[in-house]
Amino acid sequence: GQQLNQSPQSMFIQEGEDVSMNCTSSSIFNTWLWYKQDPGEGPVLLIALYKAGELTSNGRLTAQFGTTRKDSFLNISASIPSDVGIYFCAGNTNAGKSTFGDGTTLTVKP
Amino acid sequence: GAVVSQHPSRVICKSGTSVKIECRSLDFQATTMFWYRQFPKQSLMLMATSNEGSKATYEQGVEKDKFLINHASLTLSTLTVTSAHPEDSSFYICSAIQPDRTEAFFGQGTRLTVV
Figure 1 (cartoon, rainbow over the protein chains, first blue to last red):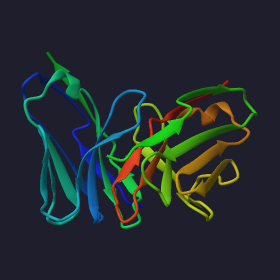
Figure 2: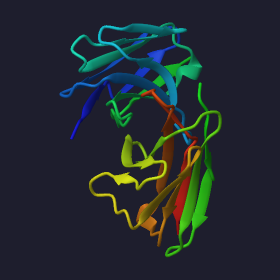
Figure 3: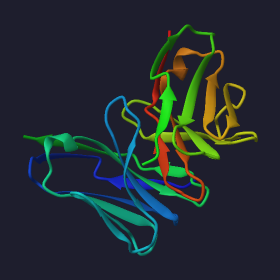
Figure 4: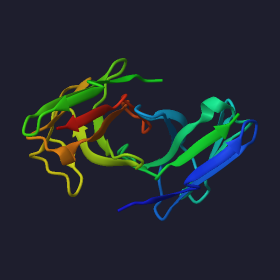
């Protein structure tokens, strides 16, 4: 089946630093999504990408849909303590079915 | 964004009993909903795709007779874990997509503990 490789697995950064994480796949996806999950909660959609090469921002977050449609990255600028959580990438087919990466656990030290 | 509500958020049940989890789309009609399972420190694994008015499509390795899915209306899908056992303890999460869209919105999740 389809698999997503998400890296890094975890990050420990200082408040104010920028963060970058990415996902790659051997399969092509029509949509790339980035979610954040807090403990005990469901994932919350951060950014959705629909076209190859698309670059989209949401506040301090920026994500890009790779031109090959097999990869995507998420950047967080000027991190703050509330950015702590697990970030998941997900690739969607036309049917809306999501394949998730393994997640990146972000820790922000004040 | 679209709102998906999942209930209950936590449930503890005895081994051998059945548990029903509800997933509702509050401000849109969802012809398709998805059910995921998440073990601690792991990613979300798709269990099944729930289509309104038709049978659910289960992923390989998921027992359809154990995890009963009913999508009786455009705003409600239910997952029933039948004859639950301790190994069924997990975090179950639903998601729903709006018509003609591909991004999914997730419910809050249900923490199931079978004792």
